[in-house]
Length: 614
Image 1 (tube, rainbow, N blue to C red):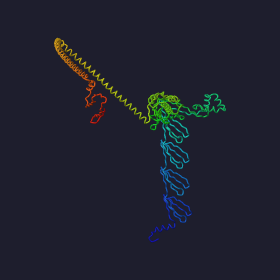
Image 2 (image 1 turned 90 degrees about the horizontal axis):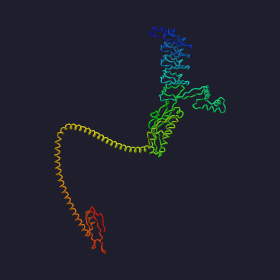
Image 3 (image 1 turned 135 degrees about the vertical axis):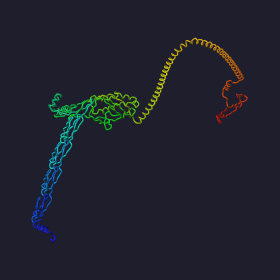
């Protein structure tokens, strides 16, 4: 120590060396003492301890680790011996390093379910519990594996619905509406809300019911319905008994089974109007028929030019009313090997459902097959033109004997068949369309001309009638005017009658005089014309006599009058060529020289037209 060290420090250092170093711990601290013999001691505060170098290896003051949990928290304590303790707040835990391995504060995991929820609690032991709300559970990791809060699945069926409940043991129940059921995963495998089958007045469904027949009931029915030899064979088996037993088992409909606990299935029909809800041991018959597929949906009626596809219709409700169906019979070959597609429309009615169920499983498919057979048979003996001429017979029910017989076998009635036309290959159809267009154009032109003529005739008749009416109206008007004028002039006429008679007499006399004068003039003109005609006749007679005398003179001179007259009547030639034969005239004498003449006759334009040789 030097001179500057205070006395207090000197005293403190002395006491520390003599008595040991002091260690003081308050309420939030503890003293950790490690002894020389290896022991470790913990002294909780408030405490005071001096270090003894002869006993203690180390003495250390450490703060306490306090864990405080509120009401919504807990303290989880893990002891060094492996135990675990959970203390719910409010509480305080001080960690002891020699006892506690770990201490931590956590928020209490609380699970709350209201009235529309439930809790699925799985224990560490493997048990599972279902707690319906409203409730609250605090998760304890030592007891619970996990807790899950989920909404309650409620299934509600209205009056037109029912609940189909499938239990985990395989049972099925049908709960008629109105009803409500909460899904229990420990009891229920599946719950579905199904709509009841609503049947109109013209609809029906086929229902199957499964029942269990007791042994007493089976033997009672056997005693009532079987023949005595069959019952004797069943009671006293012999070599023939197996065959008889098989015969009993194989009765139609499976109505009798000579076995205990056998299952029996009954079939019945439910007709509308009704709302049908099946029982748990009932199911509906599902039909799978041919049909047309359009927009992903099957159709029984179909549409023009459709294709019937197997199993396109899957339904449970039958319509027992007159119905119709489009159908196109394809690849129909005529006698001259023309390929056609015949389009038909079939009208039918389902009359006996029981017969249909026993006779077929695809009514539409049977109808299509029978229709195709009838149409192909009808067209096989006809040429293309003959088929077009007799296509009207395809609208007669008698032209479909196979279809008619088959529909009677399956409990249906064929009402009517309508032929809707045909379609052929593109080339054949084009040729036929051109012929049809030509005939149609001619017919339309003829119809148009006839209509124009009829229109003109009608217009003429209308004009005639209108003209007649106008004339009648004008006649009536004129008649009225004349009647009025007659009344006005009747008095004047009576006054002028005398004067008129006198005037007529004067005019008559004057006319007689004029007629006498004109008659005299006419007679004079007639006499002059007669005289002139007589003079002309005399002149003509004189000319004819002179001409006859001249012809007689020519004849006497040896002139051929026929040639002469012909020459006079002929046209005047462009040139004359005269050839004299010699002193003998026209007839050459013996020994005379006959000249040979070759003449080129000029043709039009100056060329030589022909040659004449003599």
